[in-house]
Each structure stands twice: as structure tokens, then as C-alpha cells.
Image 1 (cartoon, helix red, strand yellow):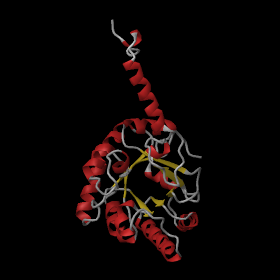
Image 2 (cartoon, one colour; image 1 turned 180 degrees about the vertical axis):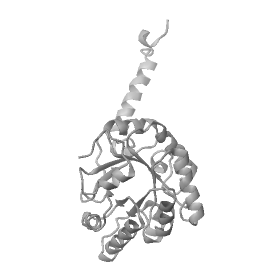
Image 3 (tube, rainbow, N blue to C red; image 1 turned 30 degrees about the vertical axis):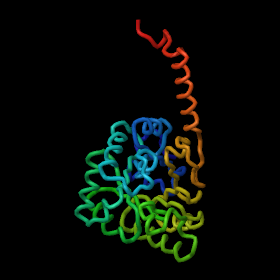
Image 4 (cartoon, rainbow, N blue to C red; image 1 turned 30 degrees about the horizontal axis):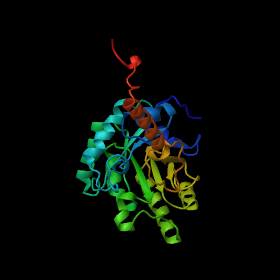
Length: 270
């Protein structure tokens, strides 16, 4: 059984394959989300390029820049203590040749204090994955519904519903595992496909919209807490209604200001 107070490392994370409870991964983008995730005892925090959607107002992850990722990863890295810290490589930062990909990943690690980077794609990413690992930079893979490929996929669509696609996901997972990734995110695929992939490889799979057969689960912080008013994807379970609660709190404060109840003597210096 994992010690919840022990610092998570890449070898420990990888070693949880088949040993202990499912891994718990949550996105984090700033000090409040990091402190909350740490206090709740998550195993790893992912500074996801989903910050483009939930923080920066982009319609997809594709406009997110390396500087924006590093900016938020630095904030997380300054205050995290125990959880593993993984940072997404944004679109077109690891598609540009081995040398530039290494330089970009090195910036992420050096400037944020992250433990690992995550990148999307299957067997075609093996050369850059091998180069990163040769440079002692741990890599997490990402297969299935890969948001940076939304143009090629024709949008955010569940992957692996036909046998040809399912078999390709499994082949890609084997290729990534053989290349040395320490874990693979499986997103947006039928549960049976994710279970099949998880059984086929010897590194932990982390599911998001991939059923309960993975070795762990990840959710976006804002989705879990209901911090945005939009409709959640099918795979999200909201554990709070953060947006509505925030609106209620702000409205109560605004009413108190307008009616002269704030500040009171208790909030005033003498």
C-alpha cells in the first residue's frame, strides 16, 4: 500500500502498476489548485494544456504556447511538496525536430521544477520520446482522443470504436511503452479498449473518459469542482457546484456593500 505522505517519484509512480489502489491525478494550474490537490492527497498533478480552455479563454488547447505552460507550471512548482508534477508539452513544441523538442522540454523542466513532461501521439512520437528519455527527461504518453489532433480527427470524438482503430491504439501503446514512457493517458475511448490496452502494457494507464479498467484516473480541476457554467462531458462527475457557489458568495458580498453592511467594525482598523 502506498504511503500517502511519501514524495511521489517517477519510479514510484511507474511501480504502482498492479500494486496498490488506482493512481489519482488532477490538473493544477496555480497556487490555490495546487494547495487543494496536495491537501487532498493526489498522487500527481498535471499542468495540462487544458488551461487554454479553463483559464485563458481559448476554444481549444492548440493556441497555448510554451511560455504560457511554463508560467503556470512555475506557480505549481513553487508550492507543490509531495505529488508528482507533470507538464504538458503544447502543440508544435515536440513536432519540430529532435533538437528543438529537447530544448523545449528542457525549458519546462528547468524553469518549472517539473518531474516529467507529457506529449500526445502514438508510434510516430517514438523518436522524440527516446531522445527525451536519453536526456533523462521522463515522459508520459497520451493516446486515444488527443485534443492537439482535433483538426485531423474532425473534432473531439471518441476513438477506438472500430477494431482497426482499437488495434492501432494498442499498437501505439506498446510502442510508447517499449520506447520508455513511464505512464500513458488514455482519453476518450470505450472502456473495453482501455482495459485491453492496460492489460497489454507494463506501465500504468491513466484514464479520462476511458472507463474503470485503467490503472488510475485524471480529471480537470475545474470540471471536478464545477467551476465553469458550461455542460460537462459525459465522463465528468462534478463533486461541487463551484460556479454557482462563487456567484452566490459574490452576490452576497455585493449586497452587503450596497446596503452598508460591509465593511463592519470587525473589518475596520481603528
